[in-house]
Length: 232
Image (cartoon, rainbow, N blue to C red; front, side):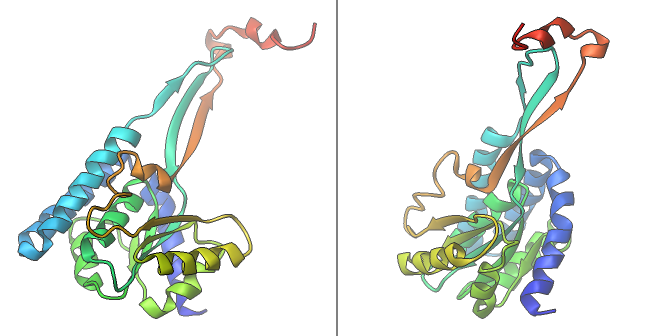
C-alpha cells in the first residue's frame, strides 16, 4: 500500500465517528485548539483568531437541525453532514492563518482532513490540535510532494487550497481528470483579506444536506393524507 493510500484509509476510518459528534462538540475542541495556539507566542495570535472566527460563523449556520413540515404527519429533520475526507493544502504563497482557517472550516463541518503545506509549521499546528482533544487521525499530515497524487484519488471528497491562482488551476485540472465522484475545490487566494473565508456561510462548501424522516402515522399521524395524489 502506498503512503497516500495508507493515510487516506486512516483518515476515512475515523471520519464517520467525528461526524457523529455535534457541531457544538467539534467547535469546543477547535476553540481549545485556538486557545493553545494563542498561548504559544504572538506569531500564532492571528491563527487563534481565525479559528474562533470560523467556529462562530459555522455554528450560526449549521449549529442546529431544522424541523420540516411532513405532509402525512411524519417527522422530518434537515441537518448537515461532512462530505468525507478533505485534502487541505497551503502552497508557498500562503501563511499558516489561511491554512488553519481551511482546516477549521472542514473539521467543524464533520470532515476528516489530510493536511499538506509547502512552508507552514504543520507538525506544530496538528500537535496542538491533538492536545486540544481532537481524536487521533482526524487530522493527518502529508508530505507536500505527495499532495498531487492524493488529489487524484477518487475517495477524496474535496480539496481546500490556500494559494495562488496557478495552484488552483493545477489542482482543478487534477480533480477534473480523475474517475469517480465529483470533488469540491475550495480555494482562498486572497492572503490579505481572506475574502472567501470571511463569507458568513463559508462552511457550507464543506457540507452536504441530509434529512431524517420518522413515520409516525401509527401513533397519531394523519394517515388519510397518504391518499393525496393517488389519482382517485
